[in-house]
Image (cartoon, rainbow, N blue to C red; front, side, top):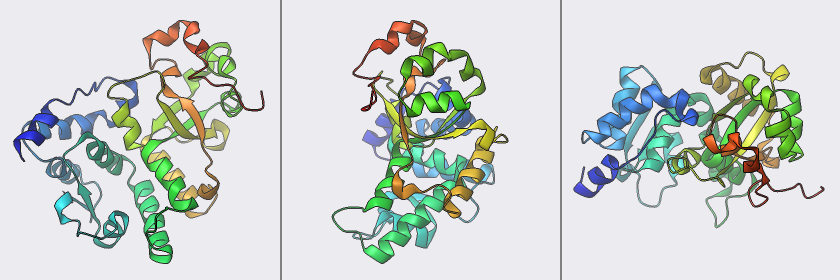
Length: 264
């Protein structure tokens, strides 16, 4: 690992007590500690993967193993190897692979299938573009129906203020690794694109493992139509408990962040 990469890794200011990292904390701290001690991101993730018996048959490898000119997604699918650079972006991508293995494999297979049939091209196309949104900036929100309705209609005061107590029953699980990278330096405007599921439709999803199995099956059975981008935008620091400032309800009066519905 070169000095610059080592310095950048050491300087990562990751707050592992942040609520959005709760499900990733144990493995994340282990991998981060290895990188801080001088390991490459790929080798740190690979060590944690093997130590916990995760992702059998898959490997994290250095980015240099990706042949020049070969599509990243196609290489992963064909070789079952995940090229990984020494940066925060790929570090969080690796953690999502460890925690959402079924979903990541399913998304990768869809991407590789599109590349095989359509080629890489100047534009990704509708399906690949939608997969990228989920992969980079997505999340899964499990919530009471009232919260799902308020989010869909961008009724921010209802979502975060008038029905705030309902958030005790809700759970937001980040999926996008770019989203997690941005949250290392939290800003009010950070917005995720979520698949919002009423709790009555998925009552047993109390763990990331269960959510991974459920969402992967939705993609496999085409119950979740990714081509139509089934996402709802949510400014994540508005989630109760995710930001001290949102205890003051004037936090939600910022119309540049909590934007009104176009039909309002």
